Image (cartoon, rainbow, N blue to C red; front, side, top):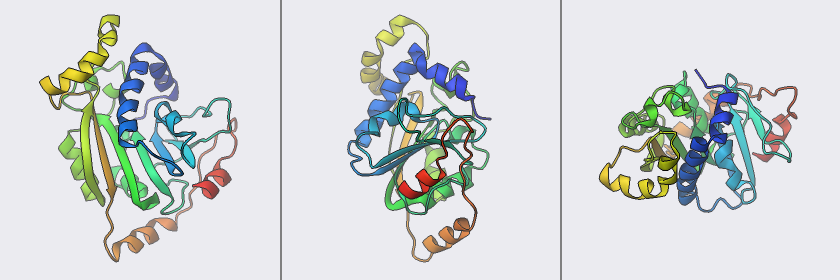
Length: 252
């Protein structure tokens, strides 16, 4: 079950959420240091991490699951956020350069369908970053945070899921070694903790971060595309949010 959009927004506006956004966002940017003229899509709850791509990318869009809810995003600009079923994305085949998956996989009921749909929309040289709670980490036990909900994973499980759905594992890391303690002394020490704890406690970070590329087999690509392209794809747009369907289909 997905966390409410209100809970997620409240968390990321809290001191702990601001810390998470800084630590995780820095690693995302380290891997994706140049998205110039690329089309970037965030799936799940990704707006805290997408702002840094807005000026540089050709288009950046946030897609949230229907059960989660949505806020217009970005603030004070044309809306680039929409709701959709993750197994039926309102995007054209081979149209996206980068997909960021956060607060998604650990809640997914149709894991295979969701990953296959991401495979469909990615370009042949596209990249996917998956971020999930680490089953060995402390954040997966912090039920007050969104990372304490859903199913945490091991790195090997993520590699298996990706490989089983036609993705090639590229690299991975653990992030968020700062303990989930809502104490100022802990948050103020986060830079030191993030620097040294990976050497002292490798693999014990709160989150797994895995990057994968699209695997192409001759004869298989067209079969997968034909399987999914016949379905209708429409974002579920709240009445308070401008209709994104034409905006998404033309630009992404």
